[in-house]
Figure 1: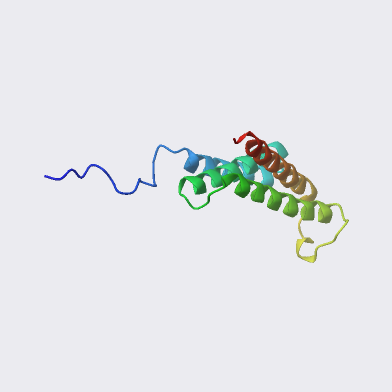
Figure 2: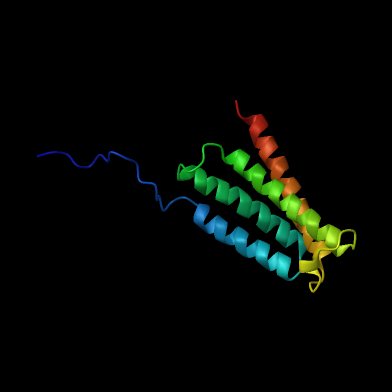
Length: 129
């Protein structure tokens, strides 16, 4: 009889990985924080979401460098947040965003989360041998 207990390819869906729960918590936290204008909750949720998505994509072998992906998320957060802050303060009016209010503080949350995510990616990158 042949031994079929050894798999040719490792199982990609390891249920013991925490990423699925962390992605959900990060997404929910960021949404709640942005909707109710709770900046600290939004910042923590966005950073957790970016790091968790990078981690889950690395575990699934979709990306080779999750640190660069997390840094990309941070850069996107900063860019979108800067547009929201610029519109919310009246510096750069954006026609599509005219009917919305409270965008400046929500943009600040995105910018802070973006810089924290980029800073975390740089810190992790500098610690790699």
